[in-house]
Length: 74
Image 1 (cartoon, helix red, strand yellow):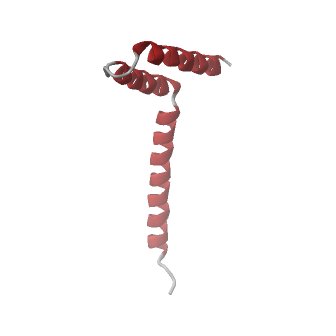
Image 2: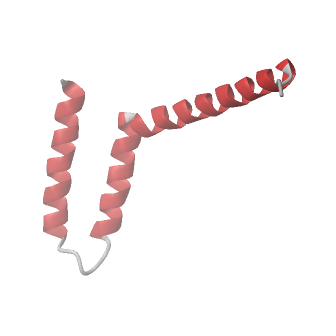
Image 3: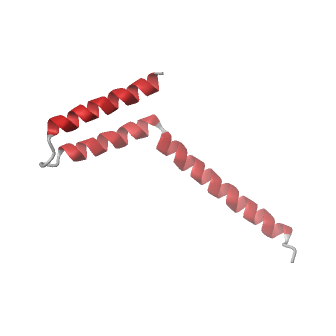
């Protein structure tokens, strides 16, 4: 059975909107500022846990921060 052109056009529009939404989400996730904020939030959460050695987390955070900064500046 052949599909109606209106149905096909609606399917294409729906797929286009889903793709646009996915691209928007990916661009937000890949934004360096978002990555830094998420990393900072994760590190702060880890540092506030009493069982974690703070100096080790700070050292790892500094290394990760330097690597991110290096990649951004290249």
